[in-house]
Amino acid sequence: PDRLPDLLPNGNVVGPSWNQYVDPTSEDELANYQAHIWEVTSEKELAWSMHVEGACIHAFGCNPESPERYLRRSSEAPMGWAIYSAERFMVAPAVTSIVATASSKKESKSSGVGGTIAIEAYMAYRSSTAVEAHAVVMTADGTVLGKAKFELAAMWAATNVEVDIDSDSWTTLEEEGTVSVEVYTAKGEATVMELTYE
Image (cartoon, rainbow, N blue to C red):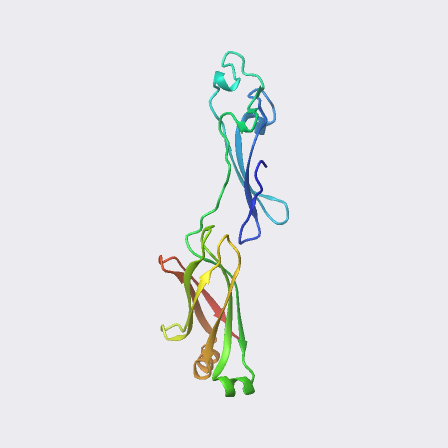
């Protein structure tokens, strides 16, 4: 690629590239296009790709009467289509991990905290600034067991947040067995996941 790819929350990378030459007559289909976007998994398998076929313009060195290989790059900038950056946008924050940990009897007695829900989350899009977010743990009937306000880190860095659950609410969590964990932003982007505690 002509620009380093970006690491996504799911472990994949996405990035663009463009060709030094375009050859409309080539049997290699990729040579027919001016620019590309690729997403590759951590196992180095192609998740998806997109390819842009530009017009044959004489100023770029392409002669419509002779559809042969032509140079697209001159000096620093490519001629024709080029993609500097490719990004993925999600509709809501990505929650990649939820872990429930009970406090010891000694800790619970001294602090009043029955346990903690640890959450790993990512912003829904790549931003240069952090975004305010909230995490709420609740039962099926909507009873809130605990909540926390935090900031989703910029540039798709992982954000780790802990929601403390008081002793009485932790007892409810143990009795319910399954609770909902919601992570949402001020824009209303929300992800709800179930946590089963055993």
